[in-house]
Image (cartoon, rainbow, N blue to C red; front, side):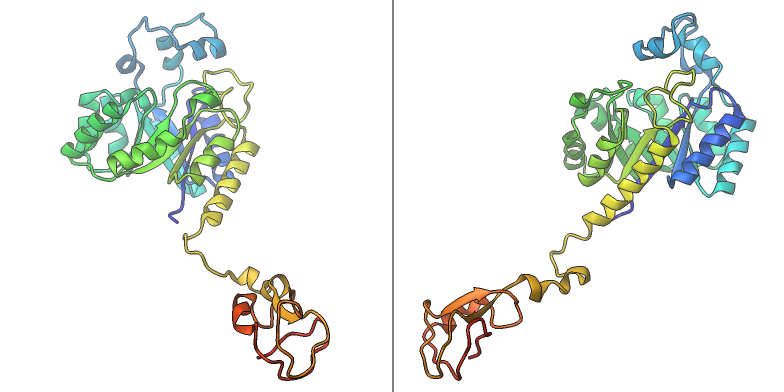
Length: 332
């Protein structure tokens, strides 16, 4: 099985602090994630000056400021991006970031990013999709709030613009997502409909759902994390803390090992149990040489190092070649 690509989504949980961002990188690396992902945007290019917050953002951050004012505080400039990329290299983890505007696409491309993660909100942004597609980079596309038709159109734009290496993530954008709204089976509906690799971007509480997604065939998992769920900011409450992130990664690695190659075969670990657990044809009572084997004088019992019960019909009617005591393995 292909190794699952695990993205630890730091997002804007750095609260605008480069030191906090580095601590998030540390925790993602320690947890064993493959990549740590931030968000790249210019507030002026992302939202209007009077755009209101999402309901979950009002719950987590109040309504004293609007969406523009909130995200303005969370911008990362070019120098901070560069610093975080270098820090990721020092910690042995891939740096990723989702661009939210055309300028941010250029910023990330100029910094040499090899994978572009498209957030759910941009799946209907034609100029944005066309620009990313023209880069001919690997793309990971989130599909929250989408129907199959939206995904089909986005994939067509990306492909006709030049990109062919695309992984599509099933996603629900409510923070946190009610478990009843996850609809994990839609992930494989996407796979069958568009013949693409699929994964899952998770916003539920806990780690059960992304683990289940791996069991269903996800090749990529994205999950928000934070240093502390009680911190101020829009996404902390629906994020994992470091110990939870570490446990999610551990469970995913175990699940991908458990899925195996799909071939039904005897494993090395269980081979030693064959003779102990399987059965053989044995004497059900004392049997004299020359006596006919019948269903009355034979039994099937453990261990399994004698004649297999699958040869029962072959044994019945044969003559005993010697005397047998009760429970002795039969020979023919």
